[in-house]
Structure formats: C-alpha cells, structure tokens
Image (cartoon, rainbow, N blue to C red):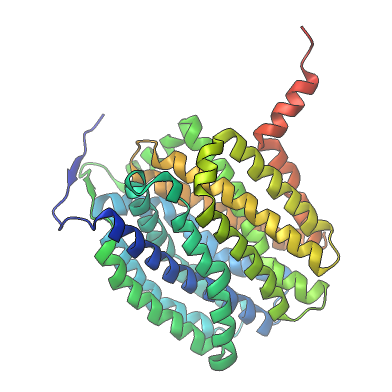
Length: 401
C-alpha cells in the first residue's frame, strides 16, 4: 500500500480539557445556526404555499448537495486539515445562505439551498474528524457531548431563536443573522480544530473516494453506516414534516408544531449528555437493542396518535432511540483505528443520504399516504436490521436439536 506522511506544522493543539469545552461551544453555535435555518426554511415554504411534495424536494435539495459533497470533504480535510477547510467553508455559507430568504418560489429556494448546502458537509466533516481524533483522550463516556450540544442548538435553541427572529425581523432579516453566525464560527473553528494533514500527493480525489468506500468492506463500519443512515431517514422525515403535520392535519399553529421539535430535540440532547456512562456499562449489543426498540415504539406512537400527548410520547421515544444509536456508533468509529478524515466523511455521507431520503421519499409518499401514516412505513425497515428482532425470528424458525 502507498504510505502517507503526517504533516504537523501548526502550533500544538489545545489541551484536552480546553479543547473539549471550546469544541462543544462551537458545536452549540453551529447547531443554533442549523436549527434557525431549518425553521426559516419551513416558514418560507409555508409562506410560499408549497405543497407537501414540494416541501420534501425543497428540504431534500440541501440534503442532496450535502450528501454528494461529504466524501470529497473527507479527502480535502485529510489533505488540507480540518481547521482550513472549516474556516473557508464557513465563509462560503456566510455569503450564500442569505440568498435563500429572497426566493419568491419553492424551486428558486430549492436551487439556493442546493448551492448553499455544498458548504455544510465541509464544516460537518471537519468537526467530526477533530472530535473523533480527540475522543479516545476526551473519554468515550463523553462521546455524546458533541452531538448533544449540536442538537441542543438544532432542536431546541435554534428553533426558538429562529421563531423569535422571524417574528421580529422576518425571514429575510433572520437569514442575515445566521450569516453573521457563520462568519464568527469561521474564525472560532479555525482556532480550535485539528491541523492534522495526510499527504497523498500521487492520489487523485477520485482515488481517495475509492479508498473511503473500501471502508464499507469492514463489517463494523458497514453496520454503523447502516444504522446511522436509517436513523437519518427518520430524522429527515420528522424534521421536515412534523410541523406540516401539526399545521395541516391537526390544525395547530406553527408554534405548536415547533414545540414537538423542541421536545424531541431536548430529549435527544439529554440522553447524549447524561447517559454516556450508562451506555458504556451496558455494552454495544444491549444498547443497540434498547435503541431500536425505543425508536420503533416511538414511530408507532407518531404514526397512530390522534392528539398532542401521543405525539409527544412518540417524539420522546424516537429521540431516545436515535441518541442511544448515535452513542454506540460514534464510540465504535473513534476506536476503529482508521483514517478519521475518511471514516468521518463516509459516516457523514450516509447520515445525510438518510436525511435526503427521509425528506424526499416522505414528500413523494405523501401523494398516496396521509403524512402521519408514513411514520409507520419506517418500522419494517428498522425491524429488518434490528439485531434483537432478527435473533428473535431466528430462534423461532431454528429447528430443535
């Protein structure tokens, strides 16, 4: 195999303690920006009177560009370091996202979202890479801190601030606020993220992508990617349509729909931040079974409930399942000993592919199904990969000795 040289010419990294808290601060700010943008896109879609399938394509456009650029992002980060890639891509997002607010049709908004979304995977993979590199010294029990603070911003603080900003400054003005946040994060992230570079001068980007895809031959990496991809499908559908379901099916206000997102996000964050030690003691197999069982039960509540209590229970159970799933996945990758830039790019890509599939498939399925019923369609897919359910089925059909 071709050997790679590690080039480390930058000043020493922050000490573990300082890095941990500086990083989660960056994650929180990043999550707030993403959460605000999600709410602003939904409010813009409602303002444009977009139909469900159009909203699915609208949200899916950003996810598609993010998915397509995740693998190249891993290559560029390996070559140029996480800090440089993060800083430059954040400046790109700063310039592009305000354009979305000026869209006067759903397809124009989708086009701007697709273009702006190109910047996001470079930011996400850069943060994932830096976190995975440092996680063994930070501690596996803190593995959920990054995703937890990120989701605190995405699912709780961001939607609240997005709703508040849109009521005072409108959608256009709110997008300019997120632009300022991207600018701040560009310099903040540059100062704390990894400067590790892997020199592979004789290898093209295409060759690097092939190397990344070869990681899928590893059963552990493949399983982690399957679980995260399916989790992304559920998250993509929930995040895209839960407000639409609340407004159009139950005749709630948009603010009441946002409440469901906030509760789901708060639960997800709480599990990631507080249950790391608990998951480490339970082990991978037990945690996976608990995760998938909770997620499937949550989907049942979300798909069958006719009122606020049932939907809240479903949102909470679904969030618990997603969080436990992530805690095991991230721990397994961090201790895999593989190229973190490559693995991070692959991991990010499958999650974003799931989000794209959840949003777009949900939109198209809404032509033949009631939106809420689509929650039930994800259940057979999860049952097919759940190790506990597969073991149970195998024991039923196993012939006695």
